[in-house]
Image (cartoon, rainbow over the protein chains, first blue to last red):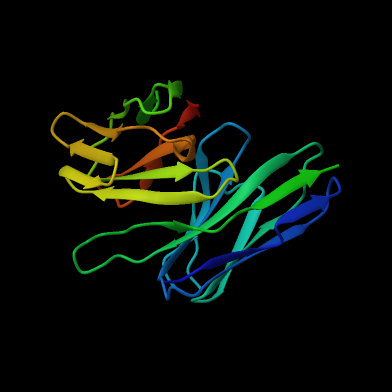
Length: 115
Length: 108
């Protein structure tokens, strides 16, 4: 089995600050994702990447940058943290099998609070 | 409107009872995944479905692509089944569209 590691687990930032979240996976999966989850809500896609150095925008990409430095890592940057922002950022990875299956596996999340 | 609509939005059950959660799609879904987000926030993949059914222990899920819905049945609910259940449908462009979740509370 594999694991997805997100760092940090908790992140407290100041308004206007640039903040970077990191994600590592050892599944050897091709595709990686960043989702945002607000309290009591569903998941919204920020960015995804289908291979190293690839970036695809999701519905929520404005205000974020991402970087797929290598196959195993995918980082997300909040370009300017918004005051009182609170959300959980979830990283996931997947690989499409020969049978077409594309199951997602998730990290434990990074909980962001902005003062 | 929502492309993937989950119902109910919340559900409270006694331990030992059965329940059914549903997702209706207004997109041409090709596959469906069901996830449980436990109270600690971790998302666990329960099922990956092409049209048809799958069963795993007390959980059973079905996906009918022609009628555009999927169901998740929980038999003999246990306390550890508590959490929020999400379905996510893959569209013809391989994009995953998420529902807004069903929050399930199991009471002793």
